Image (tube, rainbow, N blue to C red; front, side, top):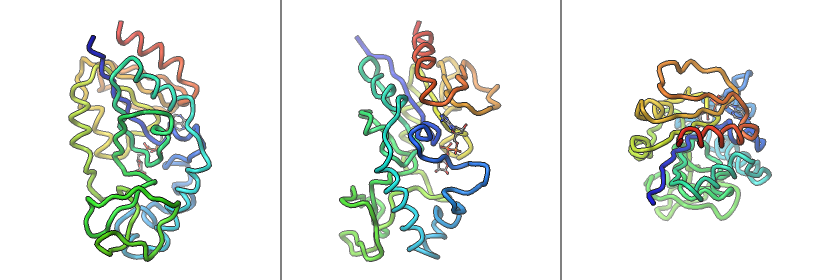
Length: 232
Ligand code: APR
């Protein structure tokens, strides 16, 4: 029997229930930093030490958190469906929960890449990247993160996956950051869509959308019911 296909599109909200802060908190800061000071190509040119330190801290924090019930639920969907996770998150909590197909639109904390050739990507063997850590071409390593103002190289793959899905699930994203936020508009009007997020959205223009207004870990059973309903 051919398995039904599900795309799960996630953002910072799913990892919030594991203890990682979301980006758009009330103070406008990201872990006490202005985004432009730590997550832009300009910041890298201006102060590499600060940028490396910031991501070293994020990596350290990642070691201290665990996947939550929603990460595990998404991984369990693979028993019954063909599942592709498309995430804006740079943590590895989906993989640690057992998800096999995870596309990281905004990069991965556990990886570094060459500043000379962006195709040279390395899984880190330690928690930090320091000044003087070099790629095989002898250029400085940088975090494997898509910074504000940079291209999102995986976007085409994400669009392709999204076009042919039987169900599109969105969890914990403000849908504020483009092009990732565009994905929802690529899903066919006939395809059921489910959003799990405690926030308020104005998505009247999206057809066939069910909004479960709950936090990720609390929304698991409602999501399970909504999936069953979508495939009835
Ligand atoms: N469970 C589910 N959703 C939650 C929870 C929770 N416990 N807590 C907060 N949320 C929701 C908020 O309602 C909001 O809609 O998570 C969303 C978080 O939004 P953002 O902080 O904007 O995060 P995200 O949408 O992932 O940001 C996208 O922006 O800064 C960049 O590259 C970064 O990947 C990131 C991108």
